[in-house]
Structure formats: C-alpha cells, structure tokens
Image 1 (cartoon, rainbow, N blue to C red):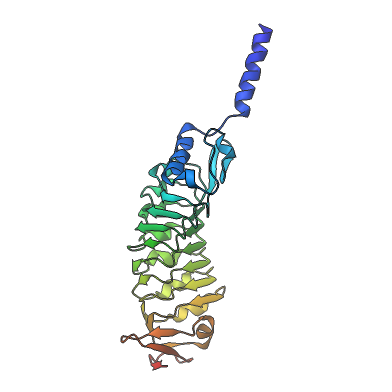
Image 2 (cartoon, rainbow, N blue to C red):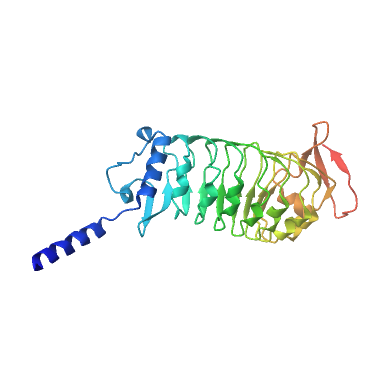
Length: 284
C-alpha cells in the first residue's frame, strides 16, 4: 500500500511538472498557426511539444501571456479564436503578411498591454472593442490598409502611451475622447485621410512627446494650446490645410516648418508671429 501511495505521489508530481496551458488556449494557438500558414513560418512550432517551448510564446502560471512572432513570415488571417488567450498581455505580429480584418471581439483580451499588428496587410476598420482593453499601453497598427473612422470611445484607454496608426486609410475627425488620454506620449496619425480641426483640448494630453499629423486633410487654426505641452519634443503637422498664424516656438518644433496645402493644392507656409489675432497665410 505504501508503494502504491508513493507511485501515485510520483505520478502526480510528474504531471504537475509537465503541466501546460489549458486545451482552449492551446487550440487557439494551433488555430493561429494554421490560419497563418505555420508550415511556412521562418521559425515553426513543434505542435507535439509543450506550448511553453514554442517559439515566441511565453507562459506564466500555465497561462499564455505573450505571443511574439514579428517578422516570421505569417501569411493569412488572425483567427477569432485568438480571444481565447484570456491572459494575453502582449501580441506582436509586426512585419508579416497578415491580411483580413482585426477580429471584432479583440476587446475580450482584457489583460492586453501591447498590441502590435503593424506592417501587415490588414484591412477593414479598427474594431470598437479595442476600446475595452483598459490595460492597453501600446497600440501599433501602422503600415496597413485600415479604413473607416477611429472608434469614438478610444479615450477609454486611460493607460495608453503609444498610439501609432500612420500609413493607413483612416478617415473622419479625431474623436474628442482621444484628447482626454493624459498618459499618451506618442501619437502618430500621419499619412491617413483625417479631416476636421485639431481641438484646443490637445492641451489635455500633458504627457505628449511626439505628435505627427503629417499628410492628412485637416483644417482650421493651429491651436496655440500646443505650446502648453511641456514635454512635446517632436511634431509634424505639415501637409494639411491648417491656416492662420503660428508662434516661433511651434514653427521650430514642426519638422517641415508648417508647410501646408491651400485649396488649390499649392504648398504654403504659415506666417510665424507672436500676434495671434491675424489669420494670414503667405505663399512660398
């Protein structure tokens, strides 16, 4: 009887030693592998080995917390089953050939801190459910073919520090809620189809260090409230249709010295002055 007890103890101990993630999480990863042509990945997974040994997968307490497969020749689409990785904190699929849409239920990943799907072939809109990722700090979707408008509730991402969406086909105005994110340090929305004005509420983004709205279709006066952003080090808002006068301090910050396009598509420079009451544009 004592020997049987000892054997059972050893068996249970061995099982605990080799315990792995839940079947649901494993199935989600396998679906990702299959949906993105895993057999052609640069570094493949051995599906017969424990999940914790799979390239780019980090497991903690039997939960998948990170999947990092950047530049690994993923070709295909992100499966909806990805949301079954309920403890996922980081998903980095940067620089692959992933197409299709971002799963509409992506917001179910409540623990997500870093979502990087940049430099792929994604299309469709940014799912509103992204705004439900309350722990998100880094959202990078640049260099895709995303269209539609920014989610209206994007301001719900109260811990967001990086929002990088440049080189897409995003249109419409910047949602007012975006200006309420006080933690944001890097805001890159350049080379899209954004319209409307840059709100004076931009002064609320007190942590902002890098702002790029270059190459959009935005209009109106450049808000002097930008000068209140003490941490702002880099800015490029040129090649829009902003008008009026700007201060010397703002002009110095702009990489292209406030070069705009007028209604005829001709490049013009905004006048640099300390007088904020005028609205004159000089052609270059």
